Length: 456
Image (cartoon, rainbow, N blue to C red; front, side, top):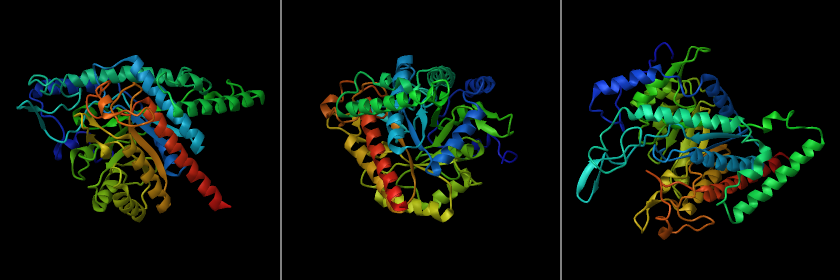
């Protein structure tokens, strides 16, 4: 593939959901500058993630993927990164404790700037303008000037991604993620029943660590408890940016997307003969593929063969996103297709994108009960099909936002305006994220106990 595929080949394919830049010279200058910059991630990290996802595909791990709907230039802060990272550590601890397998932690961070839109334009007060497509492309302000695609924004996105990764690597390896700090990860606003459950879990973990210490296992000898592997991912929507950061791995001589450890193809850009599939098929990174209600078995077969022709474990993650009440109609036929092809995949559940509604107060939101229901249905189907539910994929934040209704803190339609900060889609807040982690943990624990009983 390295001999027949070039990173610019996507330019000869049909493209969708991408901007038309007005100044070709300015675009070329930005692409040239980016192509000289260091990659944001490294081939060794990509290979390690792929190996971990291969374990997930065998049921020897679980994938937790979460973070912003669309990262923002204006909301960028060290505290914001820390708080989201902290919530993901909490969630991973809950999942590890319930599932008794390692949790692979992948953030929607350090690159999740571009967003596909359902319509190319939007209308406000009788004025029609191009849609906002994320800070890497244009601006949220509803003015003609703000909505013009600006290639220089790619440079700002690169800089912010590099800074985010620098901080995440420091948090991951500098002691902040040490499991002995499990109590300190509790955010001030994670209150209520689930926060109490987390504190009880943290106490149990602390007791186990005290026992290990008494048995002679010290922090120095148990160095794996002091740091975590944390990876970043994004939808590879803006292909000029992706091509500019694509690099050749000096070890294998194969191309790697240097923009993030894992990239995914969205439900709107998964055309088998399209530009986004063409780019993704040539890089060695783990690839995610969103599978919605319109995904046909025939398309899925073609996509699996294109994106993972060698059927490599850990290479391809299928991200199911159907909406609560629709999983039983669509997931079994896709599972059947994967079984017929003998394909190695990681099955993961995105319960966010199929459950977006417009509230009575006019805000776009997601009812938390619908999110929970889709997760339950995902696990039920995999139990019935005797296949492996490998992970979950959430849009969430460490901020105390009010964007999704429901949860233990009972966010209502009227509450949405209090702290509705997202530039695009509504995200789970910390309390809702922790509640969801406990649900998934219970499902994984029940599945593990089922297998134990069956083995007796």
